[in-house]
Length: 513
Image (cartoon, rainbow, N blue to C red; front, side, top):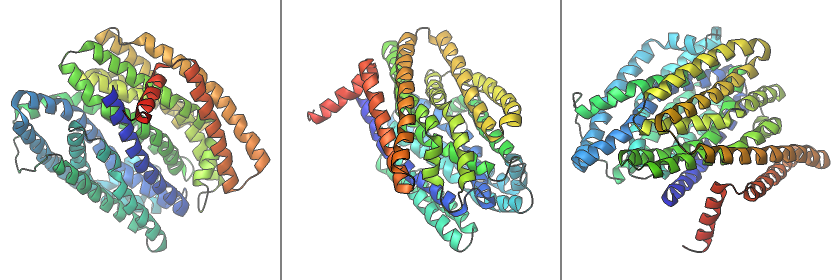
């Protein structure tokens, strides 16, 4: 676990740098365009290629890693490199075809993703999307190179690969506000290309050598394709959830798509920092342990991964709920982002935060099933979940509006977790349920107490020192710091196992060992 912990912490630090900059990109967009027609069009155009290829890319990355290990174990390093190049070249062909189709049918795509757009909003969204759809090719190749680096135990570079892209996009947004709004979407395309070149360079340094080799009939490609179908469906339904949310949001008041996006980005920051970091590091290890049939270490890794998510994310979820409005106001409310936009985003953030832990556990449990080559169970549970989400969307949007969309997403994710836990029990029997429940209860108690103290602490401090950016920042900082200290003390008193692991690691570092 020491190697796992070190790799996870390294990836978290890299992710902090990348996500802070990525979040800065959203702040710049909010400042210059607020919740407006251009921000809605930009977000829609960025989401369409992301949704279209994230489905395929996530699926590919999921099945690519275990198949690579299989090729490497059976045929050696040379053949495994040949497998990487075969996959690389097939992805180029498929993504090029997908991009061409996307350009031809852009109008229909935009109407599906944002059916409420009309007039100028629709036109701008179509124009923007025709530019961003080209990025699908580079996104696909980035997924392959990311998986290759993770196989080579390089997790830091994949964690920071978005840094150059975000710098380019930020510059493009600033220039677009001064000269032409279309500049920001060209900047987004350029950023995606640079992101691929960045990670490709490091993949070469890790041993990758490109070869113009392609063999569609290769047995490992066939096996990967066979495993991909259930994963593809499972990932597709998750993306379908997001697409439905944005589509329905486009039927609400102007700026709803942007508000939902900003709340999602805040939620996504936590996801990327803790959940994705743990999942990215643990998945190759779970695949390896599964192939070696080391059940004891396999179960232990499952427990540690799940409990780490619970201990780290649950207090953040509670904190985001009680401090949603001041957090959104401090981060976004400037320029074109007004009090109305703050209120809309804060409500969506609260509802998303209710399912924050569930979002994380869904990713971890999905990796567990994939590591034992069970791709059907996550697919079936995903389909059930998206059905529940669609029903809840139409039920809750009538009474809660924008809040109903994000609440439906959280509730369906929570239901999905219970389904996955039940399926995991049927699959492998005991997987450390008692240890997971014990840690969850301790963390929940600590988080609730922390939430109460943080909420009243913030309002007490802000009432004393007054308003203004600096004072609001100080109030939030002190309240969050006090809450973090309270939570840390409580989980130590309650003897949460994962906390002891972190403390021991810190002691070793300080001791120079």
